Amino acid sequence: MRYKKYVSGAGQLILALLLYGLLLYRNCSVPQMWDNDAAACFVMVFSGVRIDAFEDPMALFLGLLPLLLVLYLLSGQMRRDFVISYTYVFTRLGTKAAWLNQQVFSLLARTAILYLALFAGTFAFSMAYGYRLPAGGTAWLPVLYLYILNVLGVFFFALLINLLSLKWDTAKAFLAVAAGYLLLLAFAVFFREQAFFAMLLPVTQSMYFWHGGVPAPEACRPYFLYAPGQSSVAVSIVLLALYSLALYLWARFYINRHDLIEIVTEG
Image (tube, rainbow, N blue to C red; front, top):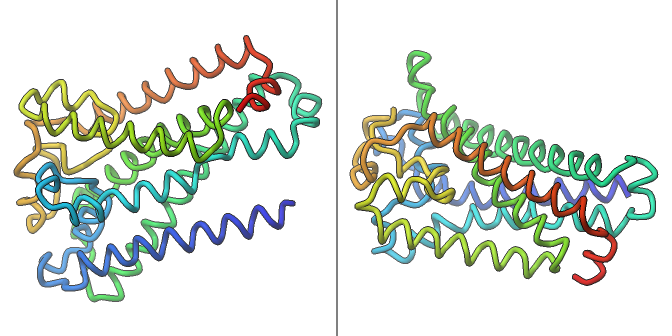
């Protein structure tokens, strides 16, 4: 079983790398467009959907597809673990809270490792295409911010999908969260003039393009023109962490008061 899990994980990673590789090739195959700055590759691939992308359906599709793929790859973990080994779960871990803690930590670790691999692949791509490394430590700040925002943002929505999949099946949970994600994003675009309100939504917190006044390679600056005001990356990181904590506490409260076997069986 463990062997199958490793093979499945490797296959998922390869699929994600291929899709992001195509996106990299589309956006960053001409280094001169980005002043040969390797940091630009990370910004153009991991900054999310630009506000003006709603005017270009193809740009919107390409901006959302990699994110939705990653969410799908991370979905269903909790349900699979419980369905396969539910007779051993509580004898091994003792309590439902301990099982939930293990699942949440495992999901966070998987998300962090997946993005570490995607960022390593992006770095390899930039070196292969002749990009130069950013000069100075602060020049790497956009890459660090992008990594943290992506991991926390994807973890929040992946956790939501996994929790819902205990009650529903994984496909329904994924489709519901994906639809909610798109609706919230459209809502944020509609209310972008109310910058404070728009930036409270979890969909915009994780998108670097939605943060004004943040460090970025000079060649990427035009893509931040539509950002709704000055936004702090630190505030976004704190809010995403708080959203995930609130979701975890709600899940712990709910699971402690219900029979997990009945929840999954009903689903």
